[in-house]
Length: 224
Ligand SMILES: [Zn+2]
Image (cartoon, rainbow, N blue to C red; front, side, top):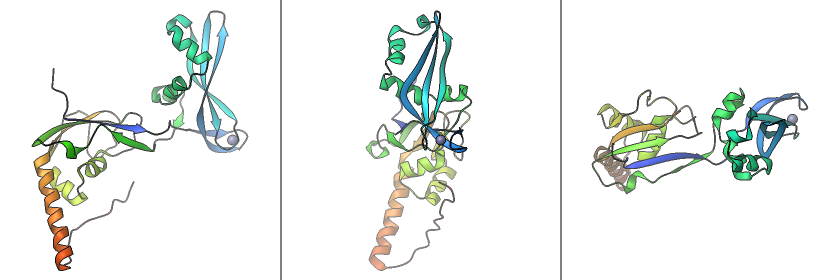
């Protein structure tokens, strides 16, 4: 058993992904948004379950397959009832299920509006912290950009931090310059982060006091 991370962050999407597909009525590619309605068909003892999506423009529906020819006993009675009664929480849960969308070969929105939950780096007082980031269904965020914002340092200082070994990636198949697709685990040298922040603060104060222009070498990100 390893100890719990010092900081466990989660990206939480504020709405489920829309599905991009050709709408027959609009005769164009449209975003279909999930409704909180299921369609349940019975075939003797077996059932099919779909989640109903609607074209954002014209309300034409598209049904995403949730279950095909399952026995009600394959799922809980409560779950079965939730499908039949169009339980909103169940519909929301299904709409956030990317595996369900992938099984439907659906092309879905990747850039989801989201918030970060689980705390802040500023609450930590130790020298070095183990941090996990669970992107959940938010799969478009690059790890380096997320960390730069999380740590509150510029691109140049973030690169300095990385070059000096201040960020160690503990999870496999993870790179700083890639989008987070699964949970990431890192070791961050917080003392180094504090030093970089203090340096930035000192330079900002110097500029304010003396009006001196200091070359910061800050570059803009061309993406995001
Ligand atoms: Zn349409």
